[in-house]
Length: 597
View 1 (cartoon, rainbow, N blue to C red):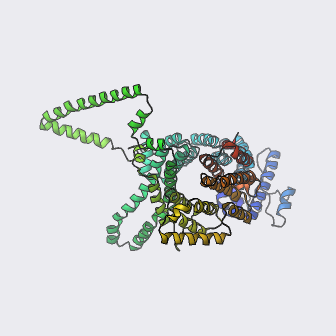
View 2: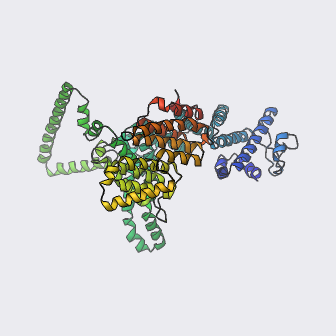
View 3: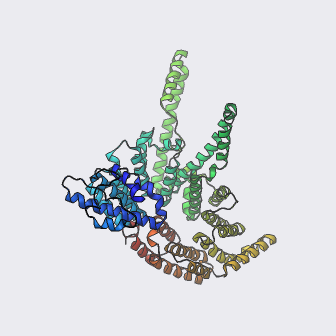
């Protein structure tokens, strides 16, 4: 059936064939059949086109499912004759479509090196094909060479400068490679105010994919004020959407479009459950936690104005010169304003009318700066945040409110993890334990659930005095429920609990995540139980060394490995402790620059 289905697409050169077949890749057996089918097409056409001087060939004939593999492998005249169903000859373009499919096929199955080799050779063979360049860029991104992927996409973009999709794709890849400046320049080519950078136009169009991607990139670069600006822009979009609904009330009632009106109201009721709201809110929580973990000197610097921050980096003599220069500039500006005001008041009514007209025309031709153009670096926005933990707690409450399903259960364990992190920093142990219980209710086998449950076991022991200081009723409930949880998991030892959960499921993804959970556990134990902290670090090192040998190691996402590497560095892990992790990552992703020694 697959053979009959794909032939018309191949012979007509339809590039979206893989998208039509993507759902079959949920079944590994069906994916294998499709791979064998297209590999047989590729081998047959390569052989025929090499033997035929006219560049014409035929796809292998339709055959029964039982004889499919043998018939395609034989390649005799009967098998390789014209298809009786489609009397169309294949050519070089058909072969190009088959290669294009196979590149996406190998990439989907995480056979990255095979996909990269085929994609590179196909681009060399058909350099004018933009689709093949897109496939090559996607493969390069998946193997970890993001800078090269941007270069390939930029070359494809220059082949058709009027293509908005290519421009958007190139900008997105650039942001993911942390080349935000280049991405902004490319985006500006298709916006109204391209000469001003295009960022304000994206804000006016509520382009939330760009703002969330840019916020994540600035977080990776450590430019927290810019990340705050982008994430806050997304939150403002949802506030505007909720405010704009009031424009529809009287209109819908007057026009009697009641069904559409009810649909709109229901959509507005759940608008904050949208994925972009959730992603921006999670980004803001992580941002506030990162700011809270910064040294006090940096926190004080974030609360300075731009002028104060500039002066802080200068010597005393340089600071004196800059202040004198600012005073002179301010005095010169004030002196220029006084004659202008007096001249305006002395003119007659006719001159005044002409001046008003000119002023009106000038204001019409120039626009006021938008929200993104005011404080583009986000410094003033960051300086206005008084309490990072309180701000993070506010967004956690939003996530908990809008992340519930129909039964009132929050299935996204990441929300519970963020709630746990914020509550620990605020020393709100009841709320922290509530997050642990909710995570176990949502998915007890999730690595994030295991991580916060193990950390709670140490927190309950290390913060026993603070828990005892809670009101008697609260302490009684907390102790009783904590004991019940530990009884359900079967142990009170955090290390024993992690080992027990690891024994239930042996997979590369879970081994990796549990190793990261042990690193966080070691950080929690630091200063309270140094012996257990050292044991947790040693166990984490063992997990990191063996995760690449577990089943499914090639399916672990590169972005997750990079996140763990950054988080481990933030937790203070030295290079020796992470050497096994980097070696395992290089084994799975040999081309990734992040793990090159």
